[in-house]
Length: 135
Image (cartoon, rainbow, N blue to C red; front, side, top):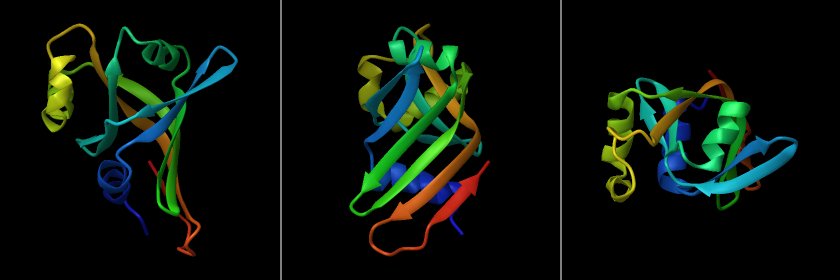
């Protein structure tokens, strides 16, 4: 049985670039993302409040990510919740120091968001057993 830590490790180490899908009105929008954090037992992503992706998430917080590494992939569906706490933003940025050229935990732009009411499904073309996690 997979755990949230297994999913985090896959996203952090095996598939550091994943794809995030949001809705822009009735138009799906998919883009590559590369930030993932496990903080206080929650799976987080990071972006800027000035970006369209943040505005789309605020309008409709239901999102999906898909990450592939070779024949294996995880698909995560859930609701993103903004966490504007300095501690959460600092934890993310400390793990991605290259982002500090654009973001700071004390600015008004940086935002981290965590998955709530989420389901992650693992699949493989290599014959590995499917698995899932819910939280």
